[in-house]
Length: 259
Image (cartoon, rainbow, N blue to C red):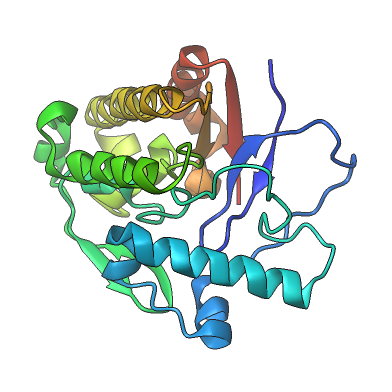
């Protein structure tokens, strides 16, 4: 069982990473949004940042250098981690990976993390949503291409895709009507949550297996439950806890992010 700590890589949303073991008991993690780095360095966080690994490497190095210049000797944004391959994976596609797997189109911004189009499933489509075939999924193929490109630049594929959590991803797919569906169409919700959960587990396993081929061995999952404050404790126990447990049981360790 490994302990996890918060990790905010330059230009990336918060996630988790394995603890080294020498961190202080109280350890704030400080990070900055893409807008801060754009103001400081003029970086464009649009489509090129997310698809061009060489450009992303250039900007990650520049962001780390800026953090070291402004906060010398302080562990801000991973700028103190110089003992391994450069992390070029964390932050790719922001927090939209699962939504993209399910077919939503990206909305890029030069000074923000990407979003996805607000094109929501109907209740009927939610109840019949098929599990994506990751071997034939265009977005997942693009993600794996990114990983292959990183291996061509760095010695190991370090970093983490932000897979979000079951409820967060379900809200992206169904919209705010999801919270009414829990009362009016619980079976449809259970189908949606289960399909998302199983897709997340398969995607995480595939990415981690590819990383292990380069000597980077991660065996944990992180879920982001930002929208859990929109449901009651009873709804969480009924609708969401079983899927958080399913993810936890699929990996050695589970990290949970709550806003």
